[in-house]
Length: 142
Image (cartoon, rainbow, N blue to C red; front, top):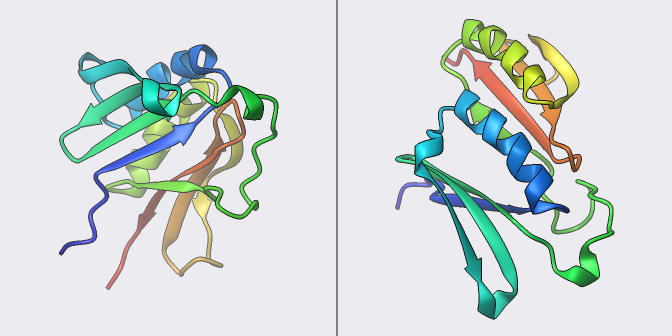
């Protein structure tokens, strides 16, 4: 088996608000909005919006009513700490940085080298409207 991720589903507080944000973000990350779909999974009580790409499906889900007011915290057990997308170059990160800001992302750290992660580790860190952390990274590896 190859360790390839097929799909990722993230629960958001407000599906309608999140959809507006992700509709701006996902094309920047290489997703085609013409491949976006919506559905309901009645047996698990959630609505889902999927952004499909031949390499990955990224989806956002509505929360259960009982959890709707909970705060997202990436350090809670079971939580997603952050999700990193791999860029093809440092220049690509620099080029998409303004588009990430235009989408309404909360910039945690702008594009720069992060030597604490590796000598050639270049990344951008940002959060969505719920505080879910993302990274765009390029690292020249030997």
